[in-house]
Amino acid sequence: MRTWLVLVLSILPLMAKKPIPVKVVVVTMFERGADTGDQPGEFQYWVEREKLDQTLPFPQGVRPLRMNREGVLALVTGVGTAKAAASIMALGLDPRFDLRKSYWLVTGIAGVDPKDASLGSAAWAEWIVDGDLAHEIDAREIHPGWPTGYIPLRKSKPYELPRREPDEGETYRLNPALVEWAYQLTKDIKLDDNEAMRERRLHYAEPAARRPPFVLKGDTLSAMTFWHGARLSDWANAWVRYHTGGKGNYVMCGMEDTGTLQSLTLLAQSGRVDLNRVLVLRAASNFDQQRPGITAPESLAETRIGSYTAYLPALEAAYRVGSRVVHEIIARWPASIPAK
View 1: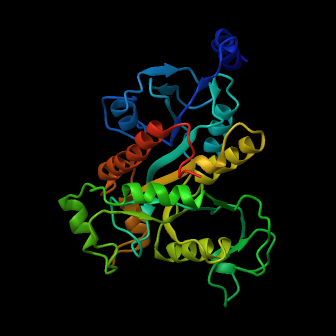
View 2: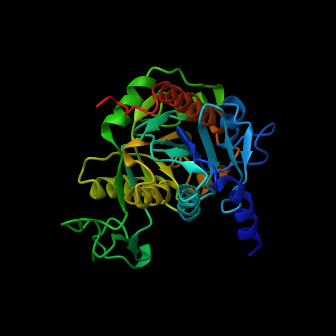
C-alpha cells in the first residue's frame, strides 16, 4: 500500500501535464551498484555518456528511471523474463510518458555460440525465441532415441511437427528492415579487444570464435535458466531453428528478452507502443560453452558476473554500437526508419 501511495503522489502533479514524448527507450537488465562512478553494469555507460541526468521515481520497477534532454529514457528491468515483463508493462502504462512513437533498444551482455561469433562481438537480433515455454523430462529418463528431454509445449516429443501456429509467446520477430538498417549503420564499428580475449578464443577451433570482435546479425534465445555447455548450445541451435521454421540462427543467450517482447506486444495491442520500432542488441561477454580440455561444470564455475573474460569489452560494445543507432534515431525522430 505504501509503495502505491508513493507512486500516486509522485504522478499526481504530472497528470495535468501533457505526457512527455520519448524518442528512444533504452532497456537494460542489470546494474551492479550505483548508476555512476563504480564498476558498471549494463545501465551505467548509458547514464554517464548520454547525460541521463534527470532521475524519475519508478517505485513499480526495480530502479528509478533516467532521462536526458534529448528524449532518451533508460531503465533497468531486473534479471529474468518475469522482472523484464513486469518492468516494461509498468513503464508502458505510466501516464507520464507518450511512448507511441518511441523506438526501443534492448541492449545488454550475453553468452555467445563460438560457431557464430567471438568474445566482445555484438549481434542485432531479428528473432527472439523463448527457452522456457516447454515440457521437460529429466535426461536420465528420456527415450533412448531422443536428442533432448526438452519438448515443445503441447507436443509429445522433441521438435514434433507441425509446429503450433500461432504460438504462445515462444517466438517474436522484429521488424526485419529496421534490424537490417541498424546492422548496416554499425557493421564497421571497431570493437575493443584485449590480450585475455585473444588468449581465450585461441582455445576454440571455430573460425568465428577466433575472430576479433565484430558486429553481426544473429538471433537470441531468452530463458530464465542460465544454462551452459556444448550440449545445451546444440539444443539452443535446434530450438531456435524449430521455432523459426529454419529462418533464425541462434547466436546469443540472454535471460529477459521474451519477457520484454511479451509486454511490448500487449502494449502495442492497446496502441501504446509501436512494435515496428523495437531493436535487440546483445554483446558477448562469455562463450556459452566450455573450451576443449575442461568440463561444462568447470567452465560454469569460471562464469561469474563481473569476471567474464569480455565483461567490460562487452558492455563497451553494447553501448558503442547501440548509441550509434540511438543518435541516428534522435536526428530523424519521429520519422519511421527506414523511410517508408
